[in-house]
Image 1 (spheres, rainbow, N blue to C red):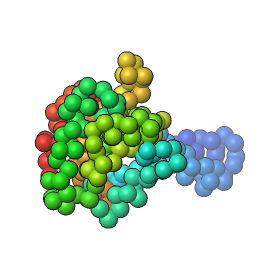
Image 2: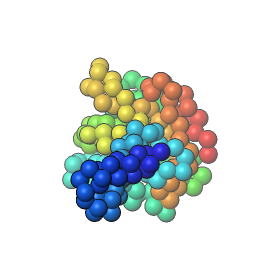
Image 3: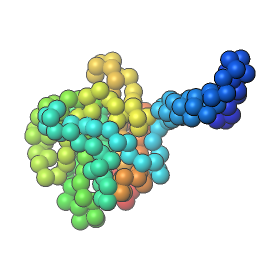
Length: 197
């Protein structure tokens, strides 16, 4: 549908301006921009590639690209609304820390925890929960990955832009299983013990 709209727009511009090069040069760019803006708000689903967006581990100097990190691997990624928040600290993160060895026995290379927080907060939160060697803590400070996955939500008491609570399995850069809490913050389908492998 959107490609038809783009073609009509370009034909109308060509007709009104008399510029025939609009169709060959303008159409692909407009189509690309409309596609990007339309797909931006669609939630990630099974079969989608994980976006090539840089996150941060421990410090802003240590950039981590999840697309690179998931290449030729089977990993678990889970996202939380905020570090040090009660549900995230008492249930969500500890569940993955406690299950890390079992997940590795089932063929998972790594487990990543993502939150719209800076890398220093994520590192401190990880230290408080003894995640070393079990879960890698990645900050998504501007919410770029969160928005590209379509998992953003507005939680003013936590500072505004936050991630919905989710879990996913990614194999060789492709999402093979995704669970997003229906209300964005609940503790059910995204928990470690509810992850269907």
